[in-house]
Image 1 (cartoon, helix red, strand yellow):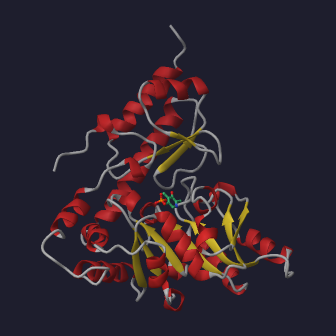
Image 2 (spheres, rainbow, N blue to C red):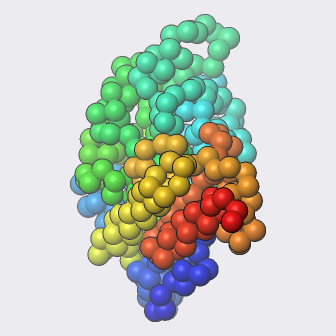
Image 3 (cartoon, rainbow, N blue to C red):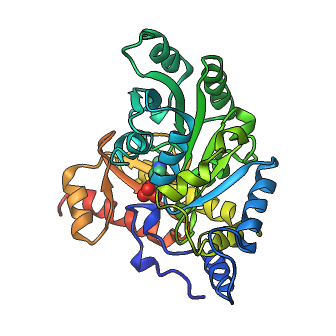
Length: 351
Ligand SMILES: *Cc1c(COP(=O)(O)O)cnc(C)c1O
């Protein structure tokens, strides 16, 4: 397969990247013959088994088309319409899902709270749960965490454990938005189990798209009591793929040989290369510790505009200001260096 062309790469999002070779090979391999539909096929059964092996537990697994659906349907499964879901104020469920969690839960309310470095804390959760306990307030029932966070930081297992213990003591469930779970696992160098159920997570939305799959996320229920009827919820929401093998086979392709973790580690390494280059060669260091595959930096507007004029695509980060630079499984070191060269060039005083 031909190598990704660095000249065509950008830092807008990890979902700008194409399909990684391992996922693409598995997708093509799955395109043979007729198989059962709606998930009752060998590819899907094997992918779910591989996930159970990866997590070292008998979890219940569902493949859906995207992260918004995964998060919204998982949250809806954890609460009733009169409940509320505690999230960090920069959380994707709050800022980027167009009200889907509220919609699919028939009205459960998101309670967004502030927190350093994109994180929730046990104290913030206690505060939300205890400041109102009356009948007029939607009762908190779920805590949702994003791992890696929206600002490219990563919860340590002890931070997760403290949050989950607090949540469970208060009768709340713990959901994890793992759109970049692979990057978090690679960054921590721990087992997927240690960063999820062993730290108290009840349901994980394990992101596939940003990891290099063509499409799709896995909803992983560690507490099987919570997934009762989840299949119906997926079907009703239009998230049950009839040709499910094409959602699930790419998972097999990246799980069977550890490619998922290698690609995530590479993306993280590219983010560190970018952050190191910024810290050394420019006056604009990263705004947050670079613990996954994203770098956030506040650049003078003239440099930002200069980069865009040179053809670079990237987003401004509404939540924390500055620009967000994401690295993907295929981000080449040359691409990082080319961006750094352009930033340095644009920073130089006019001759
Ligand atoms: C990308 C992303 C998602 C998934 O978004 P979709 O576009 O719906 O697939 C979920 N959570 C976070 C934190 C993300 O960055």
